Image (cartoon, rainbow, N blue to C red; front, side, top):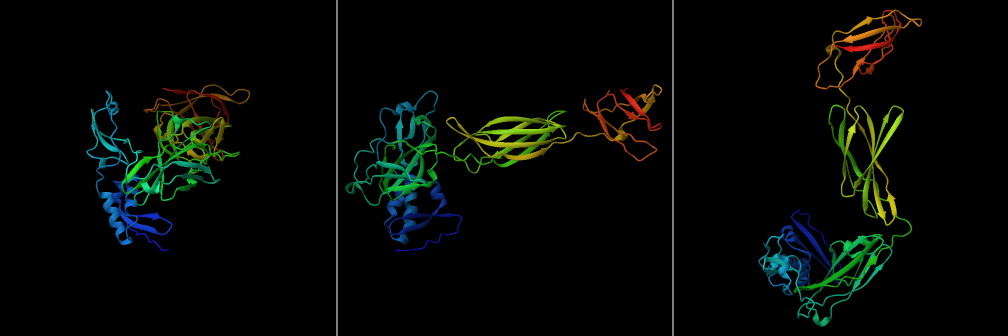
Length: 429
């Protein structure tokens, strides 16, 4: 049987597909209903509506999602619920019935309120519920992981059975149970084996568990599979360059220095998780180039660069670093440049009283000692530079600006005599 499904383009609905060996079931579901549901409720409603005729499936599924699931399978735990209450935890009234609880959790009353708790007794044989599956094998198929599990016994299955597959993992040379991630949903399927290309990630330890669900609910998840390691192989590509490297918030922090914020996004591709970032800062000062290096944790994607000199050009780079055991994988660097702001130069009209006083006579080299003076300029800044320029009146203008701190010895040419002034004493009064 072949059929073609053309999903609606409506923003307020979402198409769901249930694929079997004989048919494809498709129908639209309101986003409000989906937001209030969870994977266990979804699977139960799929199983309930699986054998409905195509015209009735949307109505069946929507009605199932919106109906209250009052009595979920299993019992509330007894005896250990009082451990929920403690001096550092407030008493809660989290639910009023099983319908308020996520997945297979039940609404249970104890000495410190009412909370959702994992049920007990699900594994016991209950009429109308499928058996708890058992993960038979996890295999590496080169570019995918194959997970296979057992089907429920025919006499305990009521109606259509679908499966929820969850995984957890951690990166490392050795398996450490405490480092495993929380259980995460991988897929819902009607098969008893599945390949997962997205989980073929070298250097990771995996565990899987499976729940069989029918319209009545579930008997719970299987025991975790044996831990399975995806071989890292002889060659591992380092992480790609960080993305969207951006410089922002350039500002003065005091009278001398500026600062900015360098931000980025994680690499688009990285076989192993990024453990840290390295930030490289380079600046040229005359004939010399100075470098600084900083290390940033992997969960931070911004770095504040301080004490930037004015009117300077910086070369900035960020590199992602991955690690596996004692092996270190340095990725390609992302780079950008930064031009800092220059200091404000005073208008020459603000400087008054400028004069040159000849102090001595020319020496054997025809050099004259002179003193240059002008009236001080009042500014909020306590430290700043004056820019001096000069030229001869008898030839083309070849003035050269000098930036100096006062007092400072200079070699200046007397504009009248064209003779070099050996030294100049800059005096502020």
